[in-house]
Image 1 (cartoon, one colour):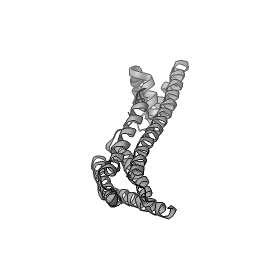
Image 2 (cartoon, helix red, strand yellow):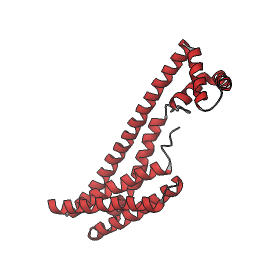
Image 3 (cartoon, rainbow, N blue to C red):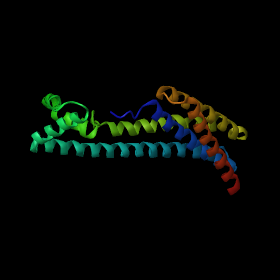
Image 4 (cartoon, helix red, strand yellow):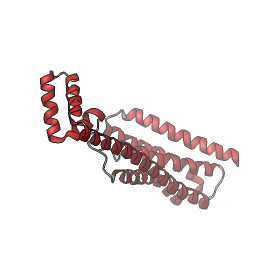
Length: 219
């Protein structure tokens, strides 16, 4: 099963929410927008962003499941039409893995006796656990919630911090949030935390700075 809800994928979607919402707010702040406009922009960015991210993830996983289902149906039909040919293909596969012909034939026969379709799917297509019907919807919902969990940081600051210090408060809080999500994702995914932090913070800082400057120039 796909690990859509892994810490790394959650961090990516949460960071999208943090950076996307903060960048929009910095752009409006650079243009001199007041509290009511910033609040409206923050809410709109959170809602639209979460729906877009969740919808895109659902569509991606649904398409992957459709393709996988088509492969499974084809393999099932091939097994029904020519089981001996499929068994020979499976034995040939085990020979390429180093087994002698007799052992490969025995292994293929045993695997096929247990579950011929599963054996064919695993060796020919790398499908060990087919994607369940509920997974695309769950993947989309998880991505959407992760995006909201990130976007809530600049959203809360827009409500609670005076407009005069919002720009700096949002920037500091966003960077701190990006560091936190990067640490969580890095440690759980066994990748370099330092590199992940540097990349993520650079993207976030650049997004906010450029958005602010564009807003100021367009004013």
